[in-house]
Length: 495
Image (cartoon, rainbow, N blue to C red; front, side):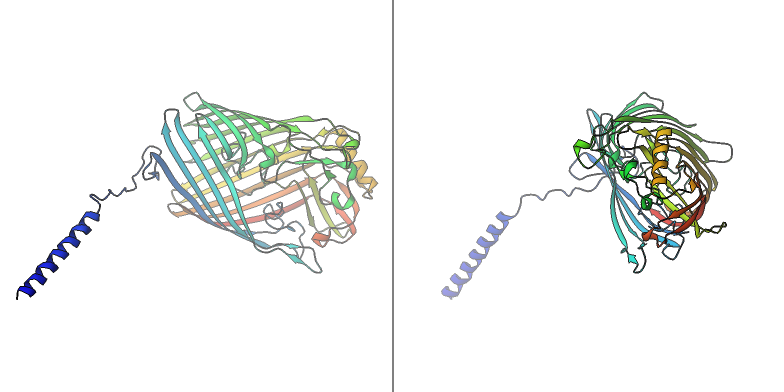
């Protein structure tokens, strides 16, 4: 019995000892859980990042597009939709689709110098296939792309990084919706690298200054051609020589003054653009033209609270450029393109082509700049909180200088395209209408119908060498203005 009692007491003592050791290993007090708190300083949707005084907001959208009309504004745009959008043959896409996901991150921190902000916006897209050439045709795969439209830091009035240009109107190239190819003003909706400073004078009055890397914009700079090396195969696609840009020397210099108040907005923008060519020939000893500075000036006006209805708005802008064409025929406009249709004078088909450039030169000459002017505008009417309609349009003219035109037309005749009237000038216009249905908040369905016209200044017939990528044969073509119609159907959910 003594033996059993001793065993039980010893076991109990051992259990107490083990329990005491385990209790000693436990933390004295668990840390409090940090919950995400709403940040009301910068508007709805912001939250404090746990453990910091920085507020963050996540947002974006999911979009589905269907574009109908292969030869229209959405069709011939450089490499984005259909490579043969203007061919109007069996290689042309009669419809085009796109699925897109946009995701943005906005952070803000209050400091003794004011708010420090960072913003980034990434866009993921998957587009339709394209066809290039025939016998055999070459299909591109469905094109998955990643774009970085915004990535900037803002501090004490400065902006460092990538975002829209201060030259642009707030609505970019869309005064009331519409296609990407509306001329008549600048558009950097995909972003451009820059350093900018904005001074705020109160009551909605601001002034801004920026150094902008135009080579980082969508499709880079406009064309600068050495016309001496042009070929017939290039000319009939709207390319009038060899690309002749040299390396970068100076960023574009931008200034802007804006008044943004309850009645609307008024803005004046100016830009200076350095045209820096490479060499006349293949090596340094061939020489080069001197640099030239191009420039652009733009005015924008938005009128709100008009009598036709609550939320209705009119947006207008006009621009003039000399050697800075991208500020009119903007970053999503094709910098060279061709279009085909039928002919009524016995030619194989009719064709129209156009080339957009800042300037041209030939061997031993200086740079002759290209001048343009244009305007665009739109009116949006809200029928109800769920329905809105708009009408919009844009028009622009491009004119080559006397020397540049002579260089192009001399080359035009020398490469076997004689027999027609040579004039590389052209006008381009877009008009359209759309309706947007918003059945619930942040969900919208859009139908947008647009008509475009290329008013080219060539006339007569040419013996074209053909365009292999468009399956166009060598034949006689009538030089003629071209028209197209496109419709966009869109569903978009913002979050």
